[in-house]
Image (tube, rainbow, N blue to C red; front, side, top):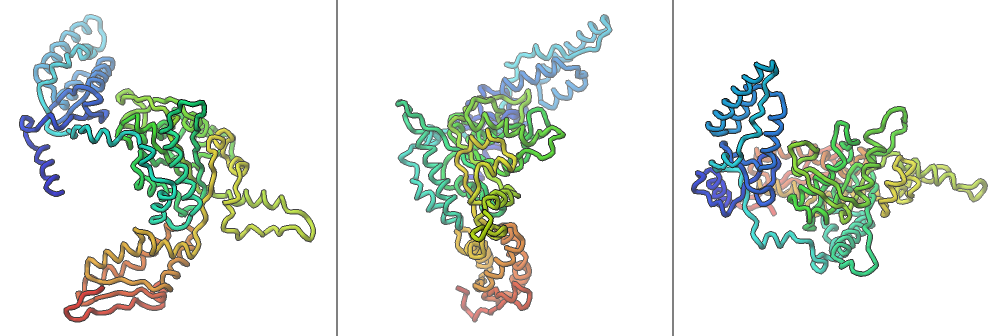
Length: 501
């Protein structure tokens, strides 16, 4: 691996004549498109390549604006234009100045649009190249074959290695992904057309919503983009446009429109775009965003910028059809529990067989009783909910689940610290009582699994600092007393000539 990296560095730093141009292709410095998509490149000094589209837009902008001659010459010299072209620009500027003196008008750089772009093909940059795709690599990025896609039970089994609990959520996602690609690979020749089933995932903070989707992205070789709804605003206001959601998926698919149209988009924090209770001011980041996302969820052709999240004159556009894109929305929906409890308490009758008002106060599975009406009352518009037909919830983490998260997943936190100390030839152990004490402290913070990492970092700070000082330490055992600040860790010295483990 190191030898390959050295070869790549040598190739990039080598003179332009010694680099094999047949193996590499250039990338536009502005729009980041390779030569295979943007066409022939204009090669400038300082190892910069620009496509015809971006260069012509730059010249048109400079020609139509009232830039001063000094500003334009600074731009030309920074871009590394040949001296012949700069001299031509100077002569054109002199003519414009004479004409402007007669008409008493401010001189403009009108001759920039007359530059012949073919004159700029006299230099080859040394960097900003990417390897050309081989025919085999292009075949690997074709749409997935349904027969090669793992079955739902295999997808769930892979998720079980990383995600603890949430059996129902893992089953729903596994089936949805499998059916999504069966729908894409179907021939569609008969009258039965399979529609996609977008999902809405509801769960308390730290229950594993984002982690579940990120794990799915690693397990499946499919284009998947994870974005956040908190920065989305209505078009025309400061913030990301709604189309930026699809732009991230296009970037994840290496700007391949065909692959992006068969991908998956996870929109996190979707509860932040709920309707605001105060209707006196314009809701540019709430109901307006929901209305703008309706066309994405339903399926339509939209134009998205390539290599950027916002539209501007210098970025090329691509048309993406969202008909075959699977959308998964997730959010914590704080306060939704109170809405569910209010609805359930209204159903209680009066008399000896009636339910108590506090019956659902300590129910850990209160979110599993959510209905479409509860989500609508929270602030989501009916049109938005109707395009998310699959609604399911994640359970809040219990003490037993937190203990399992500490030690059972493949990349558990305890396993990570054991590996770190094993590099110093020290064995690390945790008592069962210590793990329960950590879980109890995490429940008090009410931030879910995120609290575990903070607690482990706190209790392991002194140990990670002191261990490298003494080479005689062979093992460290963390006890409940150390977690509760009533004792210390059990440290054992290694015997002569013996290593731990």
